[in-house]
Length: 135
Image (tube, rainbow, N blue to C red; front, side, top):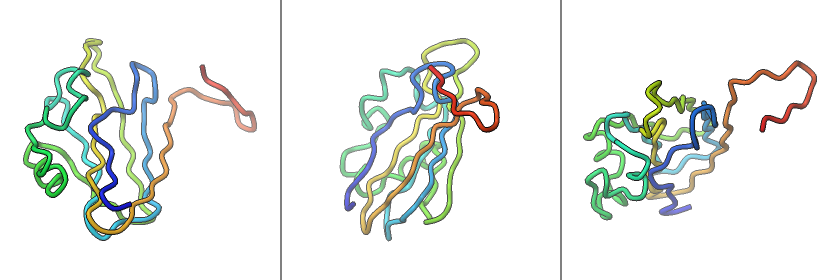
């Protein structure tokens, strides 16, 4: 939807939880809606996930120049294209510190509509033909 977005966040709740994310673009907007993956060094602790201002962006910049400004800060931004997908790891550093793995932003849609499907991929194995529950 117009102006739809998802603020700065990570898909993992801790080591081993949602180790990979698969994001599939089902419908792409005409303008905006980029997915921006932030470099590990950009965020120091999980506490910084609370606001885009932690990245030095004003609210206006976030709404109107999100991907451009995040690229300037070292982010890798992907423009949505219907029928394509992005896969990334949500790895935690071996040190176990509270650095944020796989931190990303869904920039605001400026024109049109964006529809995605998300799957969180587990490293655990499930035998072929069986339905497995990982708790």
